[in-house]
Amino acid sequence: QLQASGGGSVQAGGSLRLSCGASGRSFKMYAMAWFRMAPGKERELVAAISGSGGRTHYGEFVKGRFTISRDNAKNTVYLQMNSLKPEDTAVYYCNAVKGFDSNWGQGTQVTVSS
Image (cartoon, rainbow, N blue to C red):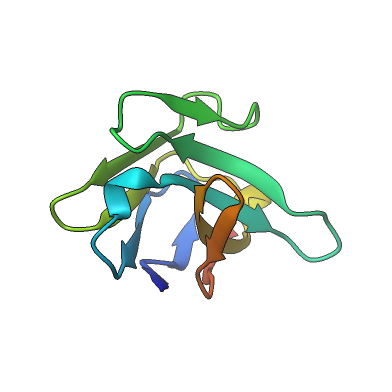
């Protein structure tokens, strides 16, 4: 089970840090990712991180503004978002995947005003 938090409303240029906590004892076996979905748009990958945290991948639109990280001792993945833009407004979801096993959190709203 995944629980996302940390969303909110900020002005353009601001920062937010999202967190996603997971239950269970096999967290480090799962690759973790953040996706987002804006109204009228398709879901898109924001960032992903391997189980060990050694590999990361970002959506092209991130352009160095966001950083994904994880703390396997706390069963938590983070998304640090800096230099936020109005187009970053969306519901952000965390996802845990291992093979064909994929789990989604409930989403947290991020709203960026200009």
